[in-house]
Length: 330
Image (cartoon, rainbow, N blue to C red; front, side):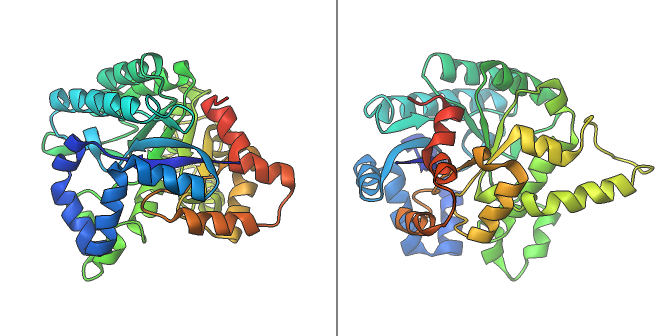
């Protein structure tokens, strides 16, 4: 049995809003590939067919793209998120409860609105968590996840006891993109997604969010976006810089928060040495199977995972047991 905890869907409204982003994705990834991906975002029958063919008993679905976080006006972002969550709840777990569970889209630009939508999605729609991106548009500026105004959302996630999946988003416009000049292929999943998301996770680790919300659980895809390998070096240097500025606000070492407050998934990173590193960093009960459908192939993910030589109990935990516990699935 396998549970895929990163399976992306879209809505008609999200598709219309995402047209400029979709064009960029098609240019970077190839028009033919992205046309098929976008078709699969909306086609439930193709999704169910892929699941059955590849031994996926259940999938946790979430909204693709920037979604509500890409809407600069917080007043408009909140109803967009609500409408998306209603659509997904009705068309996925609502029509196929045995096959699907949902994570909520969230308007992170306003912490109070984010907390309200998370609570509504969980208590009313049956969502089992939220999937968010590392930065949000806000007027002419952007906002990061550790901004003080997001505190109500993190408190709500901890109180509701639901996980938050931190998913990549393209780098924010501006000077930070210059490093990718001449190599736009690196702006997305090939490179920038991992670097940016790891940095956003690092901002959370550097903050005191986990001291204020010790039960809070965050999920990272792609086997932890490299943090299982990088965090020991980061902690070592922070220890050496203990007389410097901008040091961690939390009370514990960063790897300790990573091991106690983070989970990682196999989505889109089907590499056994990287899996071993993640297992060492967070433990076998915090690694979960995921594909990143339809951007990634369920066939490729399954063929890789099925061949891994590891203790049966650990492998079954990664395949489905850990997800059942985290998402409270029957």
